[in-house]
Length: 259
Image (tube, rainbow, N blue to C red; front, side, top):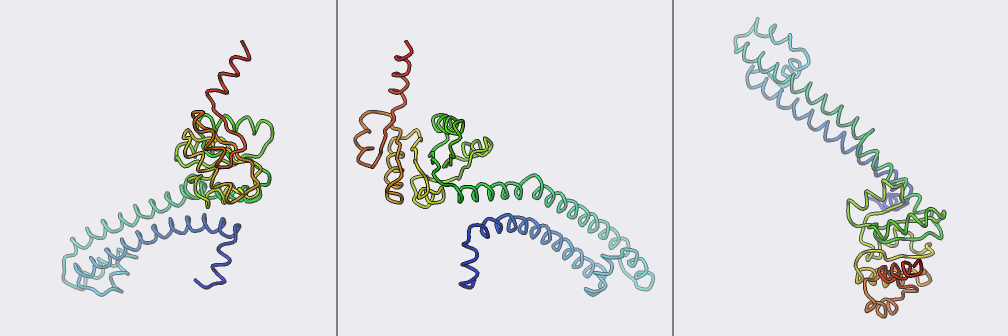
């Protein structure tokens, strides 16, 4: 790929548009390859059984009635060739139906639809400013995201687990799938433009690592770190956390306040 093409491909909008196009092209390509394979097998079989050249074999494939005309003038296994023709034509019909169903499903109910939705999500994230990045969409992360969205705050979720990521997308949350401890994942989530990063994973060490990575990329971003025990708080503070949340303690204080 030339330098100019690589430059174009790196542009966000072009990259997003190319993804569903590439997915659709891949589906069509597989279908065409399967159809061509059946045609190839048919031509090879006709050539072998009927003792004809490739051109005549292709003609038999296009017009099976020509098989009978051929054997009126030539000796050979007419019945066997006709039976083979039925098998090959049936294979072409089945392959054609499979291609149609696969392309239709990909375009309107599967991979292509999913790719277009992902394209829209990534474009929205690219345009986000002053948003809050929530790392983890478990019970805690989902609750935080829901509360923020109720207050009309823009939220971007980073989730590594497939099921939790799909749940975030199904909830119409802007989400990307990846490891929030990696700088490239945080960058994709727009950490340099974000107001706050929340480490919401049910893993104190992972949340502290997220805070460290985020502070390296965006030194001014506010960092909120969830930890499971008070012993992690000093470490989280040293990692750059502006606020440390211990859900069990926060819940206990809320319960006490309501007594």
